[in-house]
Length: 518
Image (tube, rainbow, N blue to C red):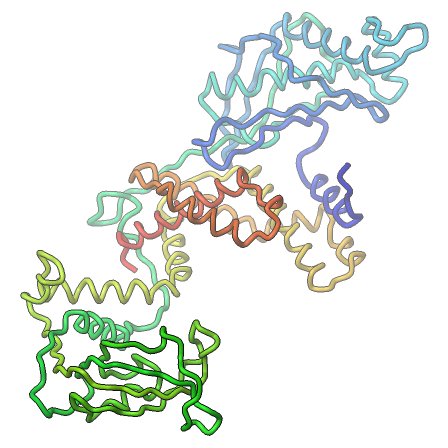
């Protein structure tokens, strides 16, 4: 059995008290998107103060076709009037009586025997459940009729907790088994998107978004390094004249024999492993390419020279037995060459890739450097995009969705307070229905904005056929699994949809960034 802390229980009670009344306790669990299937209908019975009776979700095989009318209300809510036929009220009432007979013990009747409904009603009334069977029959009718009426007759997706405009307990006074019954129900439904007219010069309502965000200027230093690296890869070698001395920028081929340095730094110790020595090793004389001291020790050397060079291995060397150590190399110069770096011309660009020109090469290189540098500012960019996107569509956000999100945020806030050392008793004082409603008012607009953006992103991904490649999802899932020490705690079925949603959002944001004026 799940155990709850007193703090968790207090939070649950406060949050449930701030929601819709439990008198008509049945609900449609909201899905995050229409494409993820119809919400499920859940029925929770309540027959009295001392006895609970939950009817199985048994179909009564009734049709609602042509029996409901609908009025639209603000915030994506509707009021639907449903007429349950006499056959349906009779079946629901008899079902309630049958289930109640199994659940309660009444003197004079053996357990499980069919007990007359009036006897059951009197027995339940004595325990505080007046009209209990009728209330359960009404709840059963709602569980069977509301979803088909909204979905099949009106093409709407119900979400949240529908509520009778007249409480079931009051409606039970006029309930007659076998007679038609009119039910008036208020329910939130999944909203529709209404895009605004495209901006001037745009064909689509979500392109050309305008906004601002701060980021660092273009990193010219990184551009220069990237350009030099590219030119280095296409450098040409020309043998040097006999007797010519090596200079920075030149290249040579050497034989290297290495030794660990003793404590004095100049006496040769044990020979280095073969991986640190070798013959016919190409060395390019450039700063920061090799262990400290090697390049500097070769400047001015000629073919045939043998030099003793003192070096220091980098602290971050993968081989920890050599990292940060000093060594001595006997280096014999075998060949020397001048290196010439190509100029950025159309001919060179075509060598890098067919069809490139000097201009397009520089443009692509600049874009690659900028995109890599811009990753740091993606969150700020996305905030600018979502702010502009939220203004491009009209969506009535259901109160059900706002309430559910506010509950999650409120619970997280209480958890953070506890993590920050606030005593449980102090936190419990904050967890009240009134405090939750005040908090909901504060976060309502932000939640509504986030929901509008989420709906817009789902719709844009559909319109633009943006999909997340399976391999990207798998890569992300594998990375997450590595971070989880206990594999039993990794709920792949629950995590995978969240990963896919996050990756899809990123792809849509990248698309919008390319189509925006930021």
